[in-house]
Image (tube, rainbow, N blue to C red; front, side):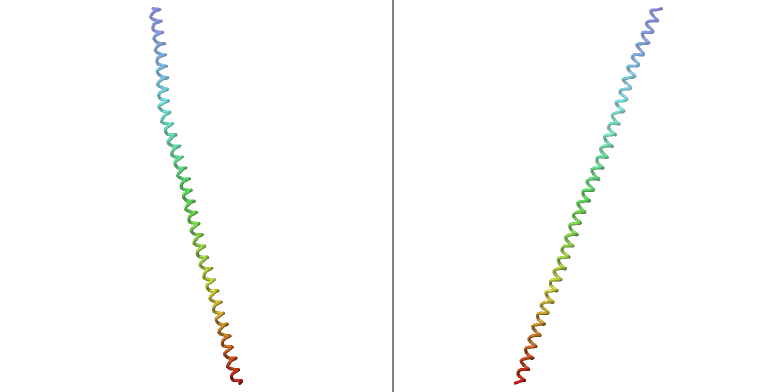
Length: 123
């Protein structure tokens, strides 16, 4: 009987040990299996965030480039417009001077003609 009891006790202990070992292994497997998807999920989330950050940075850079290009174009247009105005002003000033010179020459010639006519009459 003592033998049987010892055998039963031993058997139960062996059973418990096996059960504990099995349970621990199952637990580890479950933990590993669970951990991997969590790891993957974290990696995917991180990747998506990195992707978004990159997209935002790229978008901002594209925006800046567009803004710089637009600014340069606006600058050029302003420069061209200013240049055209300056050109027109010079042309007008030149035209006015030419006009004045012609008027002076015409005036002098008329003056001379009058003087000549007056002198001729005086003789």
